[in-house]
Image (cartoon, rainbow, N blue to C red):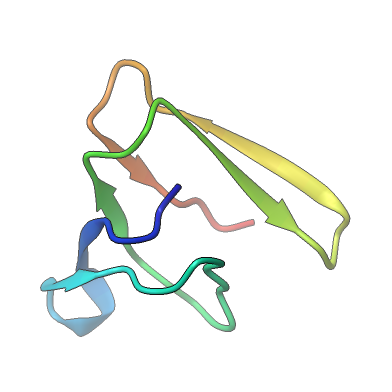
Length: 67
């Protein structure tokens, strides 16, 4: 669900970017707030073998937490 969404990248002085790719991976620290997200986003952590659900029913953005 996050592919093709816009986000201000706070690590790049809030530069407006568009997510690319089918599977999004985080190799290092990120500080992104995805705009106009779907109501439910699953974040899979393959290293910790867990899935985190980001429920955005009441908001129009999803802040990806440090996991």
